[in-house]
Image (cartoon, rainbow, N blue to C red):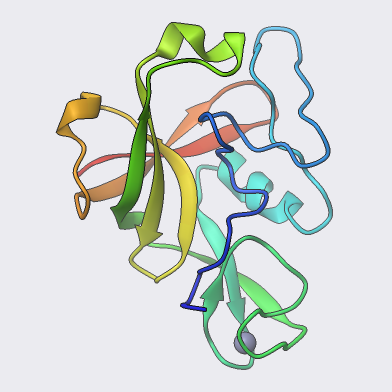
Length: 162
Ligand SMILES: [Zn+2]
């Protein structure tokens, strides 16, 4: 398994471009799309995102960054990590253009891009590429994080071309 590899679990953007919602998303007034599912392990990620900081866990033993959040390092199985601020830079590792909304809440945004972003720290996360046309998105395209404040509780990390 490469660093940061494995199926994204609990990432900010689930299939269809919405915030992933393990355990079921909760729609709230004013923001019709599913909100991220937050648990004990993912809460710090979202708390930092709210402050417009992209942070991921860095293992205190092997020093690797990993994502999605977990109590245990997936590389060396160490129980211990600190939340380190990332550069916010990365590149488009893979992407799709969504042209048909699987959830009516996303209908207005068609077409939009759901991408796997490889951060400069080597981790991967699923997010959206914004700030350019879907047809301009390319594999390997350098991007940087931007935060979208969707309500009082959540800011979603998305990525725009550098
Ligand atoms: Zn480790």
